[in-house]
Length: 100
Image (tube, rainbow, N blue to C red):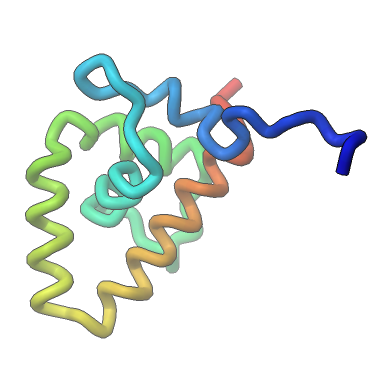
């Protein structure tokens, strides 16, 4: 599609605003942080609530990874659904762009 502009940062335009140790975090890292948060899919959190939860927890990403691994082992049937939800929310947040 020659008429469409290139999508140079397309899905990561908001990720550049979420930094840890001076680098942008990946969608996967952000989803792990959201997964470890108190937010629940059933509460239908807003993008602002998701950003706030990630902002609060991003300094403990190693702990979040351990939490995700523990949940995957303890509740494999719930893990997949929650991680898919977390990935979808982070991707939606990225496509919505930075907060205004």
